[in-house]
Picture 1 (cartoon, rainbow, N blue to C red):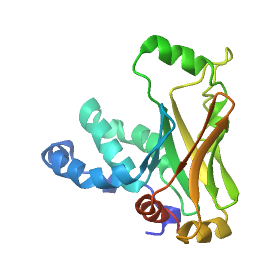
Picture 2 (picture 1 turned 45 degrees about the vertical axis):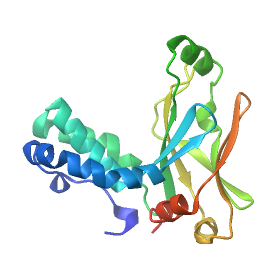
Picture 3 (picture 1 turned 90 degrees about the horizontal axis):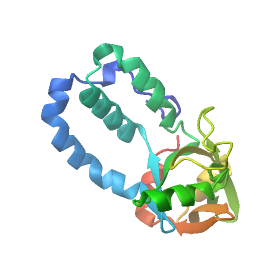
Length: 197
């Protein structure tokens, strides 16, 4: 199936009982891929680039743990299919990870609008992150969510340059209270390049 048409359908799902038996092996098989798709950005932020495999695993996990049966499937597909890249983009879950509740609240209160400040830099050009869906992640009081879903749409030229090992690729955030850059390793770049058609 072309990357631009990749979606999870009910036919891709296996029954909960079968999944429960295969769960450990599936998790072990996915771990190396998830490691490559996980990029630390500064001291408290992690960017996790999603794909069909990570989202299929997530849907199966939700179905197994919540036990909603066939009635639950449409809701899970509606929630997770938009996080599958469609050929000219990268899609990421961005998480601010702060264990201490007081510090987390204080930090997130200073990061209003951060969801609009992420980008993928390909050489000297940027692909800005676009927040997924119509859910506002920053409240009226300026406090942002600890989890964001972002889509980075690349031009054909940026995709070609992304595949060129001589081009530097960075993930970044330029929010005034959280300005950080992280380079992608060659292995992560090779893995993410699979998301392009």
